[in-house]
Length: 576
Image (cartoon, rainbow, N blue to C red; front, side):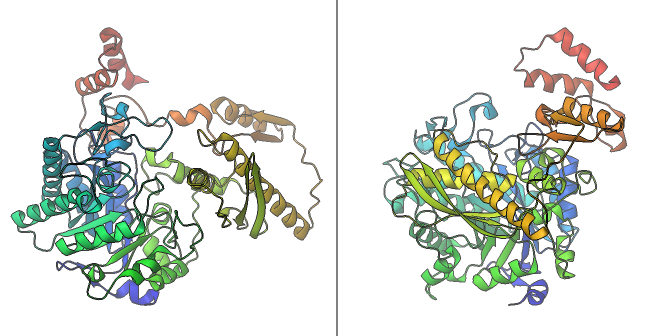
C-alpha cells in the first residue's frame, strides 16, 4: 500500500469503529499534568493542535490509582474528578476529526517512592527492577490484586464518560501489567503466578473487565487496544515467543489492535544480537491464518518522520503507524507529509508557544535535544558509517557509528558471541542517551563506568574522523584556529548573561558548555511562576485562589512550612 492510499483508506477495527487513515499520534509522556494528575489547559491545546489530519491520537498513559504514577507530571484517571479535564482533551482531538484513544496503566515497581508520598511501590512480587538503586517493592496480596483489576475497570468507565473512542491497555515498558507476565518480576506461586499460562491471568483479567465496562455502558464500538514490549533483557525475562503466546490469548478474548513498544519500527531482537530480522517480520511469519491474532491490526512506532519511513514501515507488515517526535515538532505533520515536504526533527528555540508545547515537555530530554540540533549549526560531519574499536579491561568489540551531516543517526554493535547480557543492557541505555543528545558527552551508566567511558570514547573518535573528512572535502584546514576575545565557561544564567554583555560591548565571544544542553542550573527552574490570581491566569480564564495556592504549597512542603512565611509568600507572590 503506498502513501496516497494510506492517507485516504480507512480501517475498520474488529468491534466496528472506523479510523479514517492509517496514521496516529503515538502516546508520549509530556510530564505536564498538575501535581494530582489533572489536566492543564495547555495540554488540551497541545493535543488538539496535533490531531489535525490524523486518524487517531493515543493520549499519554494515565495512572489508574494513586500508587500508580511512574513519573512526575503524569496524568491520572484515578477518580471521577479527572473526567472533566480528560473530556476537554478528548473533545479537542475529536473536533479535528480524529479518534481519541486513552492509554491506561499502573507503574508497579517502576514507581519512585517520592512520587507517592514516600510509600513503598507495589508489584506482583517483592523483587526490585534490574537497575541501579531500584526500590524493592511490596508484594501485592490476592485481595489487592482483585481491587486493582476493578480500578482498571473504573478507568475504562471514566474514559467512556470523558468521551474517548477507546483505551489502550499499557502492558509494556516494564509497568505493572508487564510485571505480572514477566518471570523476572512475578515469582508468585498462587493463582496469579507460576508458569507462563498462569502469568497471563492478570493481563487477561484487565482485558475482561474492560470489556465488561464497555458492555455495561453499551459503547458497542469502543476500541480496546493493547501495547506490549516484545522482549525483556532480564534473566529470566519475556521472550518474543512468550509475547506472541500472550497476544494470542488476548486476541481470543477480543482486541481491536496490538501496539509494538519499540524505539524504531524496524528493530530486531535485543536478546539475540546475531539475528537482524525485524521483529515485525518475525511477528508476521509466526502467525497462522487461522489464529485470532492474525485478524487483529498491528501498530508500528518509532522513526516515522517522512514518506519513505511510512512506505517502508507499511511494507514491512504494519497496519497502522504511530508518529511520535515528528508530531511534536510539526503539529501539522499530516499536512506536511501529504504535500511531500522533506522534514527534519528540529525546532527553533523561540517556538515553544507557537508550537503549543507545554513547558515541562519543552525541557524534557527528547524535545530539548531537537532544539539543540538547530543551535549547533557549527557541527559538520561527513555522512557515512565509521567503525571503531571499544576496549575496556577484558571487553573488546567493534561498533558502527552511522552519521548524517549534522547528527548521529545510529550506533550498532557488530555481532560478537562473547558479549554478555549485562554489557548489552549497558550499551542499549548508553546508545539511547547518545542518540537523544546527539553527542557522546552523556552520563555514564551507574555500575558500568569503565565500559561506558570506553564506548563514549569510541563514538568520539568516529565523530572526530568524520569531521576531518568533512574538512578535507570542503577545503577547510583542520589545523586552523578560531580566535575569540572572550571565552565563557558554562552556559547557566550567569554565563549567558556575561556572554551577552561582552557581545554587546563588541567582543567576539564563545560559550563552552560540557553538558549536551545549555542552561546549567537554570534548567531546573522550568515550572513557571508560583503565584495565584495573576493577570496571566485571568487572561486565560483560569480560576484560582490564594487559599488553594497556600494549601498546595503546604502539601508540597510535607506540612513542614513556616505558616507565617508561607502566608507572606502567597500574599506577595503576585506582585513579583
